[in-house]
Image (cartoon, rainbow, N blue to C red; front, side, top):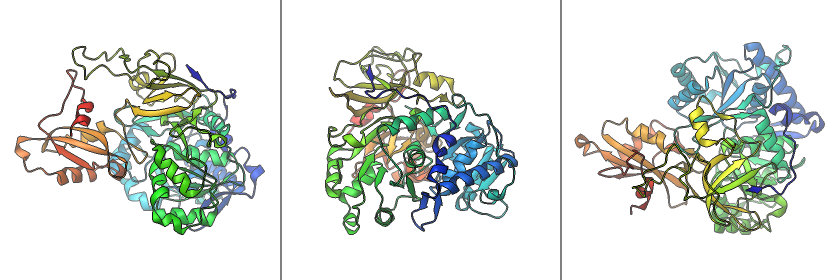
Length: 544
């Protein structure tokens, strides 16, 4: 068992809005949020007042403790105010990908039981269609303005009393992001106020963001990485968050230069652009002090090329997952030069880890087929035995940042968190003699496209609705840029011999968000399966 070298901290028993904005009055007129395109600025004092008035307005509109509010928006300076207003009103916030189709959005609304939607006017058509499909939505509000819809801006004039909801930080759910976990379709991850707030305090011991720092928020706030590293953490520490609605390289580089950004929290595709794109040389990036990459594995050689080009300390990495609020490991800012290349860091305070042997069958519910070497059983979910010292194995985590569970899905929760409280990540890692973790593979089937989760099971279910497809399997493969992309193996029905690769890709593209699109298609005579019916993805990966 591995334990953090840091002293334990006390769990933070505060609602997330208090944990983050509790010192807002102290920071006062310091800029909290800046629109990276037009320069519009909110001070800490304004952010504090605005979210409190919005909370009063939401309560006046009927939002009550325990309601679920779907926040459907790209990054804007209004997003944090909307999030904290909703939690102060007692709601659980389920964050929605702004590029989700109406069908995907409706699934999340139904599963989460959301009664309220907060969106922006350019996304209203999708929000309306999703609400109509899902049913049960009481009202759609907007952050900006739109005819026929109440606006959060209008709520700033509310004279209603600030809601007193009696939040229990240990029990009440602050955020409900959706994750596929180690496999399967997306599930609602129940993150309590305490788990998120405590994770921020854990991170603060290693990532010393402070007043005067300027952080560029280009990764999406709806994603747990953006929500924590680019919104909650810097705002808790009094830094300035410069917000961009999406990643565009020229706009990104111009924002670093114009706003004198000091810290970047990014994903590997942005590291690749910083290392290799010629446009980087046309901008003054000398204000940068560090870069931390997470959300997907970062190649050590690419990290070295990026830090050398920018004249920075080595690129740091961090590790976690949505179900862990999300952080468990990070390369501390003061240890970037000593950290070995490729490591994702050391354990955060209050966090324990085991590395389980991959030779152990693990899940007693899936012992596998002893006669089939391709189906040794599912290592996710069982207690398992520890791997030999220095050997690679499945990473399992225990600590106060572990999720409460999957919403309405006790079976999936039990498969993810064992009886002793260990969360089975599905990632394969090893630990060196100095306690640095290296993530080397994944047990789980999940595809990470530019940091976004793509569940093979979801795409397979969609492919099987095509009248010309008899069977299908999806795996992740690397493209020429080093990104993992969905590759579909498809069995045509006898009546669909003319079905083409382009038709399959278009069928999927019309029904999912862009990041979930199938990028490659291979037609095959059959999908390899174990006797249990499980798809043998290893055999597909081994095909030329």
